[in-house]
Amino acid sequence: MSQSAPSATLPPSQPQQSVAPIVIDSLVKTFGRVRAVDQLSFTVEPGRITGFLGPNGAGKSTTLRTLLGLVAATAGSATFGTLSYVELPQPQRTVGAVLEPAFHPGRSGRDHLRVLAATAGATDDRINQLLELVALADAADRRVGGYSLGMRQRLALAGALLGDPDYLILDEPANGLDPEGIRWLRGFLRAFAAPGRVVLMSSHILNEVEATVDDVVVINNGKLIRQAPMRELSTERAAIRLRVPEVAVAGPVLDGLGLSWRSAEDRSGTYLRVEGSDLAGLGRALFDAGVPVLELADLQVDLEAEFFALLGGEA
Ligand SMILES: Nc1ncnc2c1ncn2[C@@H]1O[C@H](COP(=O)(O)OP(=O)(O)OP(=O)(O)O)[C@@H](O)[C@H]1O
Image (tube, rainbow, N blue to C red; front, side, top):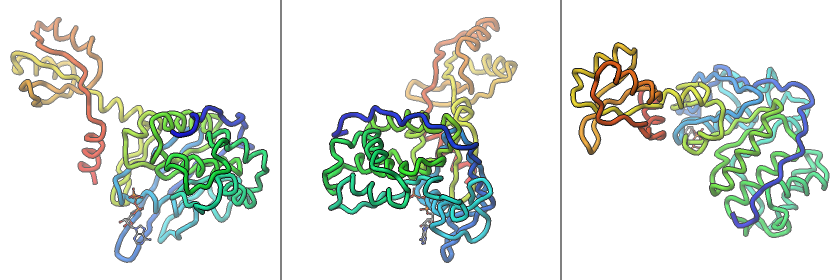
């Protein structure tokens, strides 16, 4: 990041009233013969950060654009509680969004926010506060054309926050941010969501959002593949590498413990991949059963590989 790291957080304002979930209900959007979104239903709960995941072309942007009233649904609905974006009494003060950030390159960062502030009803003080928040105070009067991708992302986020919204909708927000920027974004989104606001952020990279999100919604070909707490996915992915002299001896013991396992290969030969993460418990059980063990270790599961297996398995 070329500027000093963003460090400030917004004053912890509370939502005015309890914030309703985002409800995507049997949403369909077709472009000619392309079914970009296909009978998609899920909800996004307040107080949590939800990752909206899927490979390129899965239908994420189309879903978000429908939610924001930028494209009309072919069927079904995408609402904030029961209201669509255009039905909200004060949409700009209720929903902040960063889709594909577009800027006038000749305008300064501050002027960009001033133009948006007119519709969001934000003051110059609020602009200054947000420029501080996203660590652009020093660069505020420079042309946006000279900003890095990360700086533009942060400016776009400041723009989305002008109206002090209850909902934050972000399309691939980590794009262009360095690791420090991603860490900051994570902290910011957590503080934003904590008092009961709603965060929905898309990504096509699970690794990128794994440490940030509480819930995941995975889609492919416009269809829901999975909605689950991130913790559930992480636990499911946990696995142990067990190497034993005789599979015929260890297998029945694992079965007896109710553990799911299969043979797998790596450079050192055959091992047993045992689902779970309780290394000590497994070690003890094998010892008690008199099963000799050559190796017992946490398996570093490749997150992206598992993500695509999930897509491949059910898409
Ligand atoms: N305006 C449009 N006209 C025609 N087809 C479109 C339009 N917008 C999206 N599509 C198609 O709809 C499908 C879903 O696209 P969408 O951009 O929603 O996916 P995505 O998950 O956001 O992908 P990415 O991560 O690449 O942004 C794709 O096949 C895309 O080509």
